[in-house]
Amino acid sequence: MFRSNSLRSAILSFVLVSSCLSSLFAQQRFSVGPRVGLNLSNYWGDADYMKFTPGLSAGAFVMYSSLNHFGISADFLYSQRGTSYNDNTKKFIQRVNYLEIPVVARYFLTLSGNFRPNLFVGPSLGIKMNAKRLKGDYLQGTGPVLNGENSEDFNNLDLGATGGFQLNWGTGSRQHFLIDARYTLGLTDVQTNLPNVWNRRSSLQNSTFTIALGYSFGVGKEYPSRYKR
Image 1 (spheres, rainbow, N blue to C red):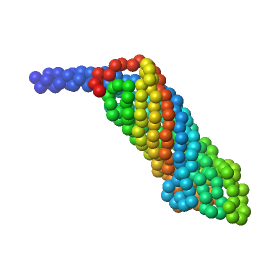
Image 2: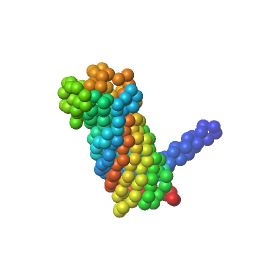
Image 3: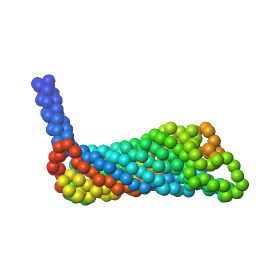
């Protein structure tokens, strides 16, 4: 009797779990699209004489939503970061270009409808492409050439954390216009052991604000949500 009840309980549990999983996967949907935006980047830590400087953020994203409150997305971005440096003797713009790959969990504030704002947070990996100094000039005296490539001064990988919010409007059949605002904080030192023109700093991490526009297109089969707004 005990074994029979246990077997029935196991079968019932399996059926319930299978039903829940089937319901979840039956509501899956994916979307992809381009995005382009503006970075305002600087360094934090031992960052004297450094100020925010603008740069380009552009690429594409893929998003998964289970048509409830939760989703996940990944971006693949060309991201210009760096700083504007001025110590009253010399000035220049330090540019470091990354392939940026943030992967974030999203919480949608509405369950359905044409307007689905969401909050997101997650890790971000930056893969250095190159680095160079631009618009260099000596304000007092002279010194080594300021302008030119200096990729060797910066580490190849940058690990950070990103978070923000997104406004998401439906514009057509499975199409959405996006406004995305986020802040990305570097968790690792960006500089190698080689001295830069500003000399070796005890700590120097990326600090980047980004605002971007995007457009998403639904891909694959779509299922209607069973949730109400």
